[in-house]
Length: 233
Image 1 (cartoon, helix red, strand yellow):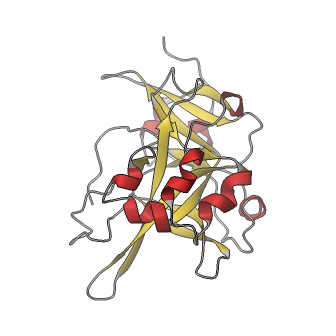
Image 2: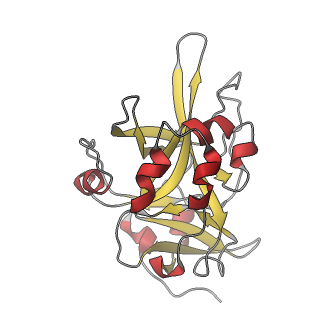
């Protein structure tokens, strides 16, 4: 699969809470135990909450980077990690997923980078109360002629709110818990009816801190990724 080089909008995030907390917050009966993750990167498997065919919530691991269902070769397919919420419903790659396969991506925080070219300053964004939250996602199912099945996911983005805007023009769509049920509803295939949910979250939900460039390395997945430092001017 091909991913764009460099650091893109919401190209990294964290999930540092316990599996028990995830199960409670997302009303999932069973969640496989996992280790805290401080530097989740594209092409890795991530935790995703969705409704099964019976309308019951489940937590599954899907690959981050969406392979279109119509791709001939998943290894050669461009696999976007994000979809612009304003236009996703009209794009061939995302259209069916927006109407039929919406999901939640649990997160503890996300990273964005400030600056162009050369060295960039990384920033970490998290809830002011440090609670777990959900990024709006969509998933796709690719089926090969030999019976192979690959499930992948993309995160939705929106314009940045006032907290994120000084760092980046875009941010992940963060959903309020009261809207989880509406977003996940498998019976509702009208993507336009949930468009009002894909807006920047309120500024007072988030706080930001400058962090080390260690997060630039996707193989570095340690608590040091989210330790505050003095930002470069």
